[in-house]
Length: 187
Image (cartoon, rainbow, N blue to C red; front, side, top):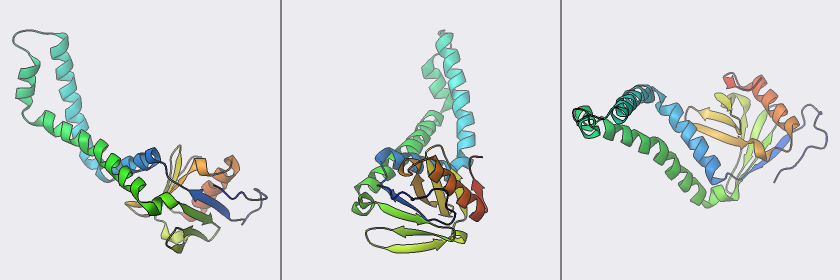
């Protein structure tokens, strides 16, 4: 799955990575991208959800004929349904997207990246492209991935499991640090 470099310490040596995304990797990345795109809407939704949960807990812990869960739902009006809708959106949309990604034969064939000091070459079943480092507007490192963004909503995904060892992870991290202006990486 991975072409290893003969000498991991040689500067300028290209790093080759073969990527076949798994379903839950596609889900995690899609969920992260959905959160990044809609996080402004999440703040008020989370605040309303916390208030709703506090009132629900109060009613459940202090039952009385005057305070019932049914009365709470009625007093909040459509809020519980809106919260449920947001929950379905932020969980269901990434699931649907991951399913669509995994059912695409081109994605199933995988992607091969060749990362050098000057560019990232991308080979798929139907195309070959080479993106110089200035093409990436942002890079983010998560515990499991490197995400190289070409736009705010489109990223190339490099799972760390596809890299042979910590040396390659460090080499990619350093290349990103040197070449991408907006990079959120581990130290």
